[in-house]
Length: 147
Image 1: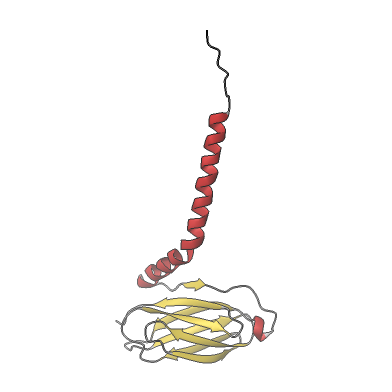
Image 2: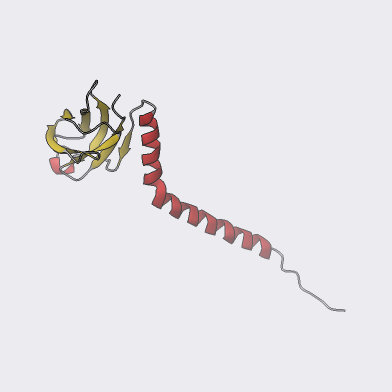
């Protein structure tokens, strides 16, 4: 008769290691693809008529312009034109540069704590604008196609 020893728990350890590996892979994929998925979601919401923002900055400022952050951005079409109106909110008084993805046009404006800027004749297609504060914080918002 041949005797064998039981290896109780070995299968459980192997399953646990597989689950840990899967969790690490999923976290890595979400870290890499998360911003792109957020941008797609923002474009879908914007296309449905909503306004959403994509925060690439964040945090709070303590009144120092170099630490000011962009806290909100909204963009919409001016009625019957190819102009885009952008409203920006910041955490502290600072200069903000607003750039359009469709036309490449940009303009700078002083915000304390809110400002509005119109980008003229950006084109009829949907697009997005990015507002960047002097400290480097930025945020983007999408706008729909011209009606």
